[in-house]
Length: 364
Figure (cartoon, rainbow, N blue to C red):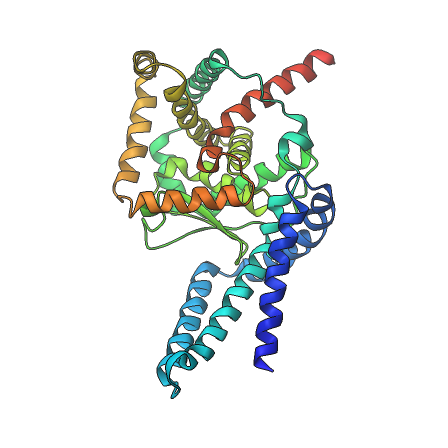
């Protein structure tokens, strides 16, 4: 009986993985029936039940995984069988656990990797972007930061988000869902973003935030500079609302932040975006040109960028090369072109978005 259950779970997990590969990327079927159907049901059920709990469900997940490992080790140590027969029960439990994790990953969120891209559904063409366009993005971003810099007190806002991050989480959610509504995407549920402790746990693996599909929640590292929290929270909310592509979630993070009523949240979106613009410029122009561009930044912007880096450097990476190889290949396995480079696609998406907006204004 136990072997049959193990075989069924493993078979169903294998079928699920194969089904994901068969459906492929840009699947209209997944867009309509999974994202527009089953995923919305899961989203609503979770957000209006366990989503109200005061603690991150990630801790419960870690406890469950730890308990499963304890059961596996206990089964091995207590077995009175010899040789490979001693591994029979522990391996069966391990296969069951892994099968359940695979099933939960895909059915709770992972099939969203097969969805149609935002470029397809919204109509964003970023194929024509060149270095001149990139420099224009740099200039317009700096101009936006200059305009916002005197509209709020940074020290007060930083302290306010430290004391009451939930208020900012609610504001970011409202702004993002307003933008998703305008783009004709679903906004069911109320995606939660939790602060994951111990502080620095995510930063030590070069990650500012993470969406964990097994618990339907996003998480940010409280070791981040609070100025970056709104952009990071909105990015992770993008994952929670069914978007898997990292560049797309950066775009949604930017779009949600810059359309927020709070100038501090707007500033977070622009400073977060500027970091990707600068990263792209570093690879697009020569060293002298990049130094000139960076040197021409307003002093307050350079100060903010320096403080953001200093916050992150408090928590040095643990095995960064291994982390990059693992996540890069994970993204490519799930059809995310470029792997880790995909994060920087936000610059092309923003440029395409602005062109689309300008075209629509001219056509009216």
